[in-house]
Image 1: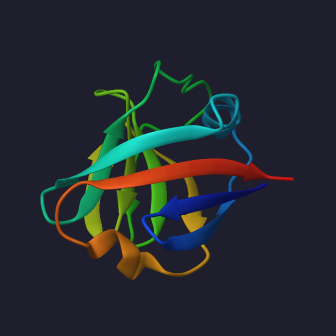
Image 2: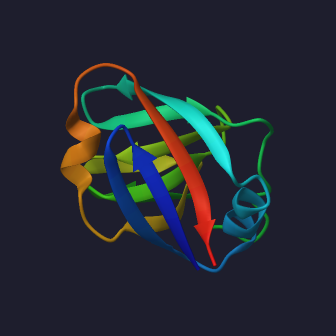
Length: 116
């Protein structure tokens, strides 16, 4: 599956993994979110509801470009820098390129849509 992220004037695409959490995320699309900076490593935003984590590993390491769901907080996290292992982090997919768009300072408005 592919999604399109419109961040400001930039349009990015991402390839999603096939897992229960990703399918649950896709059921929320399209979404317009405000992405806030967190720890100078990722942009995060609350989702309208918590996602299923059935069948997912207990955690993962995040790399720049990863699109993830952080189950303990119920938020979407888009990494623009590599990060260590985090329990409760589920990888949804990876940006196909353009991760530098997430490095812009301050909050970013993002529209996320499924590409048919």
